[in-house]
Image (cartoon, rainbow, N blue to C red):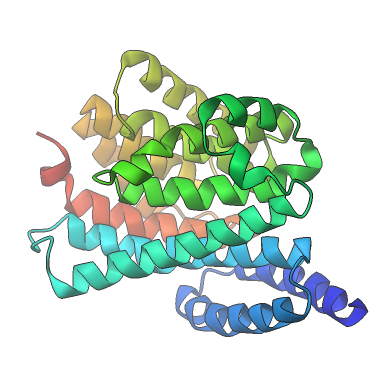
Amino acid sequence: MFVINEITAISETGAAAFEQDDDLEMVEKAIPGNVKLFEALLENSPDNYRLLILLSRLYASYSFAFFEGKLEASLLTSVPSDHPEQQRLKESVNRYYKKGADYALRALKTTYPEADVKFRNPGSADIFLEKMTREDVPALFWYGFNLGSCINLNRDSVYFISKAFLAEKIMNRVTKLDPDYYYGGAHLFLIAYYSSVPPYSDEKLKLSLFHYNRLKERNGDAFLLAELYYGRYYLWRKQEKEKFEEVMKDIMQYSGRKKEYLFYNAIAAQRAKIYLEAAGLLFE
């Protein structure tokens, strides 16, 4: 157990190092081997909270960084929705996010064995989430992120849309317990959620803008995913094409090199190019 904990501690530092590297090709090749190593370690320590969180985080990062963008690029073109490559990408994205969600839920269950039962309906979820403390934020955040990402990519699925309330409640709870966790990632999620998950309303758009502003207060102008989500979701929902194009061009031309944001800023630049090229489809 001591050896596993030592390896896990070192690996947590390694995961952070991945996220400070803008060589996306190298990181994409490195993550799968690390995941398989950690899954092997988990066989000998199945309730290791830190290891479960690490796996959830890596599956989320891997899917978000290297598969979701390719899938969106395919969806935002004239490629038929039943094209084999598009179907393969969607299956991969869903599989990795589901694995990430499962690991985060297992981490929660090391402290709250009843977590999966409590999350099944809105009433019990509200009461259950109120019990959570700052120490529970890593498991909560990664469960919400992975689950919410599945919802975002499967809006035609009754099952996933029925889970939207849970992802929203979880991420709102994270913003109360530790709003700065993982670059303020709960705010990032809620920018997209309130702009893109039906039913749509002006009140939800105001909430989307609220979370964008909170994220800007935390990270300043250097965290480009905030700008990307503001453009892709909020400005898209508002159908403000000119402002959208301005934001995407600014992201692509950004030259800052703040170390902690290098990985996600490189992803933002890739996505901005995809979205800019698809502006004709995104805006009426």
